[in-house]
Length: 402
Ligand code: KG4
Ligand code: ZN
Image (cartoon, rainbow, N blue to C red; front, top):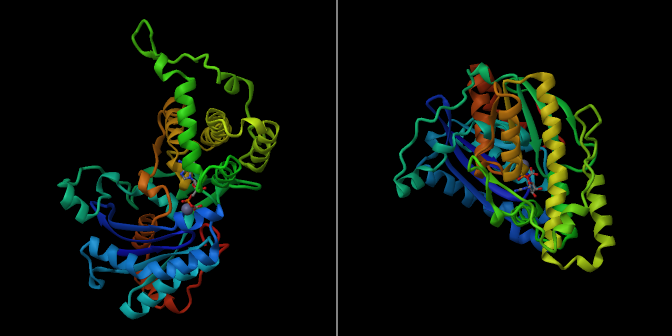
């Protein structure tokens, strides 16, 4: 079992993970969210986040151990997010992990936050439920089989990484081997969701709120109530002519760098065009349906770019597996459209996405990455890791693969 910690931003998280039938099994995953604390500021305040991590880290670790019915003797190694992230926040997790590594005499592994998001895809959704929950819900473990470190059939693997700090397409030819094909030139896509939400006066964090409103608008506009049976009795969606549908048909936002023939992204221009559009339509800013329409059109523009660039990279590199990773991978529309695109255009390619609760920041994903690393380590590497508490330091600008 590995005890994993994550404090890179505004979630204090600890998890216990282990191997089960060759796959990653999360035995417990505790996340203490600071959303309510930062909401009045419209974003994460680094020093406030650090103060909360200090307050929460020990209780969160204790809960994770308790929920997994584990003690320090069951723990083989300790893993922690070493970067990237907010320096004051990262330091709390790193310091806690170093202290436990020293006191408990356990090897220490510093994990890249995005590596964690990528490896969240290798957690079995059927086995996530912590033992205590399993007992409560009387769930029996399923036979779902997981990719293992030996599963070379996963590679090459293409990962679309979409979070509050990152937007990039990463090609992996093997475990821990990362080639960044392209990344954002300015804002990350999650950041754009959050900023657009702020412009619309929606609560922080903006991503889930925009997604919810976009779905609401889509359902109304595309006539969930106006389903017409087609001859083969499949559902056909027809557009309604509600007094508001004019919004839908008369505006749309740009798809930045869609035709750049490379894998660069840019979301700052999209955000600015939403800003100008809102300035031009001041009088409608309190109209709920108008706000939902803006959410819908913004999300459409952002997702079109993400899906099309992933499609082109899949065409060029012919990966065996495509995955999505990072907080924006919780977006249902992205999950559905990406899955549809891969199934339709690349029937021989597998598509994986993280289980919902492991899409957003958590420590289970850090434990998953650490477990795969641990399996690859030699006795000598493990010996070295047992003294890494002396040297490991948080690195807010850590590069993937460091
Ligand atoms: O990975 P994450 O939890 O933290 C970072 O590593 O940045 O990602 C957080 C980001 C935020 O920008 C949040 O608005 C976005 O993920 N997000 C979403 C959704 N849920 C979270 N964006 C779009 N749709 C969602 N459903
Ligand atoms: Zn993250």
